[in-house]
Length: 194
Image (cartoon, rainbow, N blue to C red; front, top):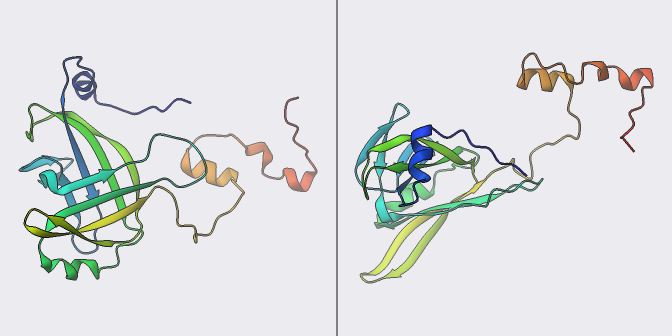
């Protein structure tokens, strides 16, 4: 299995440095009415035409491994250490909204100066919200956890067919399958190599 990522050469050089590098994770959630652009360091950075706000150690992220298969992979993003005015955000239905997670490198620990461009490591949708209440040194901490799904909802309509039109729409100019358009009507039988 080969998993290829389009990584900016400067970013690749930074993360390949045997002496180490300073990582940063950026995440975007298309929150209804108030899209979220945040990163795991402190301060604000501008990238991709957006201003990304730092949340530091308040963010917790769990990503699935790079695997292939038919089952949707799930990730989880949590923001902890919030105040009790969180309830109004938990009432928002953000299910099926876009969620993107990027990995990058910066020039120093807790810096917002990117080296090259971050690259996507997870693309999916919001799969609900959970209220988190945890013990802390100060008594109690609140937060919100967002499960993220990499595939369509299990309730989504699916089909086992892929047509020439589907292929052409996704890959303009690709003629794969053009001879199969009427194969079911003409009695054409396909044989797998033996």
